[in-house]
Amino acid sequence: MANVKEKTTEIVTVKGSGSQKKQAFASALNTIHNQILKSANDVIVRIEPIDIEIITAEAVNSTERFLFFFMPRKRVDYHVELKVTIELTKIIVDKVPFVNKQKKTYERLSLPKRKRKKIEV
Image 1: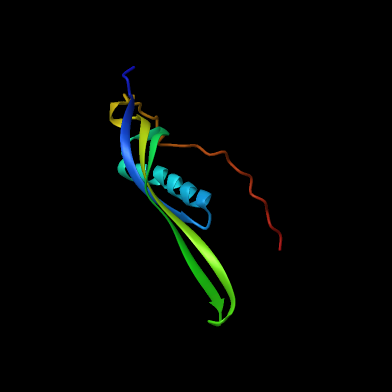
Image 2: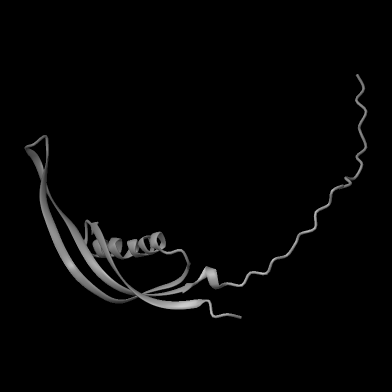
């Protein structure tokens, strides 16, 4: 059997945001899988982050008010941009030796005979 498994290292830049710091990082790290699948033609078996570098980390403060005056509420939204070095384990589909088999087809297929019910009127 030919060696069809391959390990490669790639660098991916991802962005994420959320109302908490953890949510912003989780949002960014969850987009890695979708971004890799868009660019890959092979079957991805494993995605393992090796190194994470923070490019930007921002906290955006805002104050919301009801009818422009009443009940002020402070909100904080977190935005992160990460540069992630990942190790991919993938199966190269072009190297997989598929075996061609011919399926038998029947031209005449006999179906079991059904008894018809007589309907009396």
